[in-house]
Every structure is written in C-alpha cells, then in structure tokens.
Image (cartoon, rainbow, N blue to C red; front, top):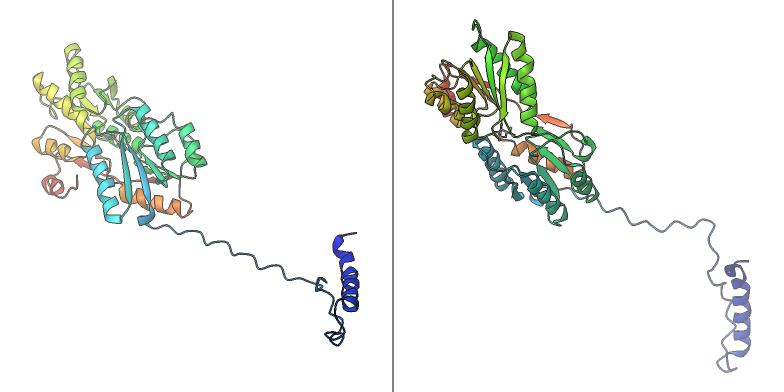
Length: 354
Ligand code: GYE
C-alpha cells in the first residue's frame, strides 16, 4: 500500500490528539471544525501542469550567418571574380565571411574544412572542392556538428545526403557547347585533329568538360590527338602546347578547358609561326575579360561562359538551409557562348562584370 493512502487517517488521529492535549483550558479555542483532511485527496482529474512551450525555433537572418568558405586558390581570372563575389556580397548582406585559401592543395582544403567544423562561430560551411573525391569523413563530421554544407562552383562524387545543395554550372554541357562550336569552326576541314588542355586532375570541370566535348566533337569526326593537364594556368598551357608542337604541327583546333590555358596555347602557336584562330581554331571556357580581349585581338575564336558570380545564390541557399528549408540537390547557373565574329562583341565586353 502506497504511503500516500494511510496518510489521511493518521493526520486525523494526530489532529484529534493535538486538540485533546495541545491546548491549555484557557487558551483552548472552541474546537475548531475538524480541519478538512489535509488536501492530500487528489481531485478526480488533475489538470496536467502547464508544459513549458517549446522555444520557437530561431529564424536566421543574413546578419546571423558566419560562413566558413573553402576556396580552391587563386589560379586565374575566373577564380578572382568568384572570390570577389563572395567577399563583396558578404559585405553587402552583413554576413560574417571566414575565407580560407586552399592554395590549390587538397590536403590543405580538407584541413581547412576540419578547422571550420571545430570553429564554434561558423554555422554554415561553403566549399569549392578541388577534387570530386576525398570528402566523406569531413562531410560526416560536419553533419554530426550540425553545420550545413553547400557546394559552390564544383560538384563532388556521391554523398548527396551529406550536403544541402550544389550551386554551379553544368560542366558537361559546357564541354558539349565547345564541341559543337569546334565542329562548326572545322566544317569542311580535311583533317580535324584537336588538342585538349585539361584542368587539374580530379576536378569536376576537368572531368566533365572533357566528357561533354568528346560527345559532340565525335559527331563531326573530330579526333582528340593530344590531351594533358595544364592545371588551369597560362604558363603550363604554353609549355604543354610547345611540347606538342615540337612533335607535330598537324593540329586544326585547340580546346582549352579554361581561358588561361588557351592564352598559353596562343602564345606557343605565335612563337611556332602559326596564326592562332586562323591556322588553328581555338575555343576556351570561362568567358573572362581576358577572353573578350583575345577575341577582340582576333586570337581566340569562341569562349563558353562559366559564371563565377555565384555568391548571391550560395548565400541565399545557406540562409534557407540554416532555417531548415529543403533545397534541390543542384541549382545550375545560367550561361552563354561568345564569338570573335560577333559584330557587337565590343559592346558586350564593355558590359561584363568580370
Ligand atoms: O573554369 C577555371 C578555374 O571551377 C569552373 O576553375 C571553375 C574552373 C574555371 O580554375 O578557370
């Protein structure tokens, strides 16, 4: 029997005993009405204690965001415009941006990622991954730490459940566009040998642009007779093209997977006595200011745009993620293609942001 069932009777006995012995006659007050049993009787239904309302979930604003941004490095004009987009947009929106330059070193980028996971101030992580693999552990650690991850510019292989969304271009389509335009440039050419200057090994744009280019170039009989990484740079683009030219000058087109590598190829062609964009057709990707200048100079035939000004979309997605909103796994950026022969090229170039 629960102690609480004996208590009322005991209390009554104690009250009666107290009445009989506790008071002196003079001070004995009229026997008080027997005190109501101590209110130990539980009423038939006891309203549950009002529960504390759950605190309303915090609604984040841009000013609450502390973004840990893992940039690849500073390898060229596209990257400079991309970094500027993140810094300038953060200032405009009142976002605290912690910018980490991975110096194009994968181990450094992974270390920077771990640093942001440990940093108590950082509440969302944005990354432009140098390579498509090597991210499983840090992504799991970020999830465990409750920090949403957004991929900017470049995708990774798999693990879609470990990041919120990827905001960036369809690199395969960029490659297809380049292949289609190279087919047009080489229409009627007896030989269609094309050399390809590739970005850093393992990078999504390097893998995907090469894939897309081969899909459409094959449709018109183009043969990729040389393909090698030049790590997105002017210097390596020139070195690789010089080495190829020493072996053979039987080339009708060069596909630079970014503008800088195409600029290097242009320099090498000139030094070998060939006229770039005439003797050898040249197509690049990015559509940076340098590419517009090369087209205005008549040394580059086509550049396929890849938009670096991604920060507004990325920050908008980061805020949505912090506020628990669901997002598509990929938000593609919109892009165009620009041509040396476009009569309005000068006006277009004047209106560009990068
Ligand atoms: O094409 C190149 C840069 O990831 C799309 O990286 C970016 C690429 C861009 O080095 O210029």
